[in-house]
Length: 349
Image (cartoon, rainbow, N blue to C red; front, side, top):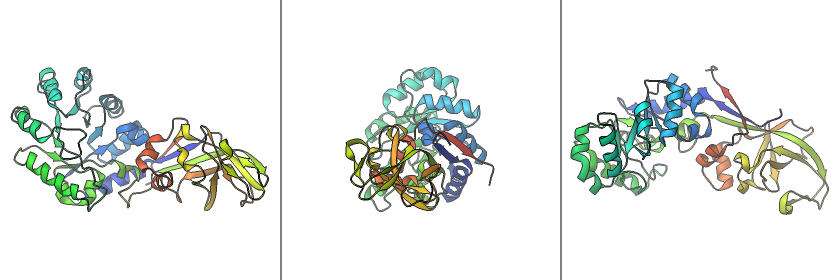
C-alpha cells in the first residue's frame, strides 16, 4: 500500500436508507441528502447506489451540486436545491430540471418571473434562523406562491439530535401554523426528525447523516474505513521528542511509525496526542502533533511493523474520532481529503 485508502461501503449506505425509509411513517416518501459531495464520499457513486435502493428525490445544497448529481443520475429523479434560486442559477435550474427551495421574497420573484411554470419548493424558517422565509414574509407572498403550485414546503429542525429540546415542539407547532391547509406536500424531518417520531414526518423525510453511518442514528450500518500506510519506523530513545514543537517525549525507548495522513487530509490537529489507530484489534496511540501530511504512532507493543494502520474502522467510527477532536461526525466526514484512494464496496449484500 502506497496511498491511504478510504473504503466506502455502498451497500451499507443503501441499507441505512432502506432502514430510515422503514422508520418513516406509512405513506411518507423518503428522500436522500447528498450535499457536500455526498458528505465527502463521492456524489456519483453514492447517489447511484441510493437510486438503486429506491430513492427518487434528492437534496443538494447549491445548484452546482445539482448539476453534478443530474449528470450522475440522468433524467427522472427530482433534485431539490436547498439554497434556492440564486442569482445566476436560472439557466442551470432550467436546463437541468432542478427544483429550487425558495428561501426569500427575492428568490420567489426571481423564480416565478424567470421560470414561470417550472418546479419549485418553499423553505420556511420555523426557529433555526438560517434559511427560509419567516412568518411575516410567508404571509405576504403565500397567496400567489401557492397559486403557482409549489412541489414542497419544507423547514429544518435545529435541535432534532436532542429529543427533549423544547425547540423541537415549538418548531413543529410553528410549521403547522404556517402550512396547515395549504394542500402542499410538507417536509420537516431529516435524520434526527425521523427518529423523533411520526408527527414530525409529514409527507417526506430527508435523511442525511444517518445514511453515512453517523449520529444520531445509532442503528446505522458502518459505512467508512480509513487505512493509512506506514512510511517509515524509527526507535526513539527515552528523552527524545517527536514531531513539531516537541509535541511528545518518549519515557522509554519506543518504536515510532511515521504514517501517511495529516490535517491536509482531514485529520484534525485536535487529534494530536489524543487519537488511537488500530492494527487489527490492537490500539496504537497517535503521539506528537498532527502535521500537514504525516502523523506519528507508537507501535512499540507490536511484534512486527504493520503495512498500514486504521484510523476509521470496526473499532473507531467517525463519531468516535469526532469526540476525540471535540467536533461532530459531519466535520470528520466532509473533511476527508482528495488524496485518499477511494475504494467502493458494493454487491456483497
